[in-house]
Length: 448
Image 1: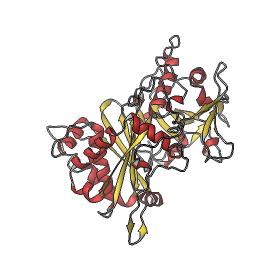
Image 2 (image 1 turned 90 degrees about the vertical axis):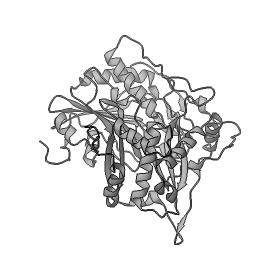
Image 3 (image 1 turned 180 degrees about the horizontal axis):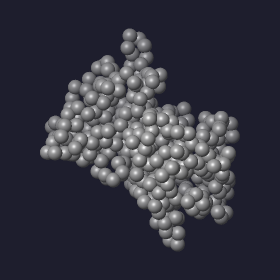
């Protein structure tokens, strides 16, 4: 058994990973990325970790990946600055078929042992994903995969998928397509992938017709010193926190909304998490704080974005309030703000945002914001390469950005994960759990 939460070393079968290229010829061109794809805020890779009880043969995984990359050929290409100068330029995908990075290794650990320490990520998990040596983000291949076989016969699959090419829905679509090639090799893909981004091209000339709070820098002063919450968080030792909310917990949260307000699970949980986060940081009540959260706009646009689109079809909705109003009120205040922010995302609002982002000096305002990304309800936890669904699914790392994650085996539950400064962990856990961990009618609480 493991004596700590540290993972043992990973032993690679080869000194260098292999490049998996599409197994037939693919279009060789430069793929335009939309302004939603190309935001500096999204210039990172989405890193997933899957634990499977039974390993799939490496040769099968490699061959099926080479087949699915024919349909998802941009993931086998490379990012390039449009002007050829550097990272600050508009990015495009050079669809050159160079290939995805595929590493394979072994770790002396069992599935059971990993599950015992899988409550939240730690730094040693980085051993499970091959680190590509690169000087900048754009030099990292859009798709990096590592398969780590375990002592017990299980495997851990880690993927790093470039966020400029895929959003959460897109990554889920790609991973399920990969699994489909293995489990149903004679059948066509259930969803035909759509690589073109022209449906989200800006207008000419750009028409910024709406106010976009998420891109407006909040300024407030404390004794004439500018306060940047994000900068403060980044300067502190951060500790991952994780909470699992069952349907019973979520119902109790909704009952705390007074006066009663019909709301979704996301709205109640986002309001609760935002409020708990702000309370734990002990901010001045005069400060204003923001909540940024991802909203899928595929069906909000006119016409709707076609099925199969795997680029970034989400925007960050934004709401803002004074600390005093958020922490002294119950959940009703936050829920109402979140609902208003969601309802404002009309076709006109989103088109205006796309046009605003034509100016590459515009940046997402995260200095006073909690950012929530929704990974639940995307089907990520249902991935099956033929040996069963995963025992565990989640992010490889934890950050100051908050994730709402699926819970394997419980569709109605949501895991909330975010890193907070070590000095406020206890307060944050108290506010998140207060009154919800009590057993009612024999229910077991779901906090981990």
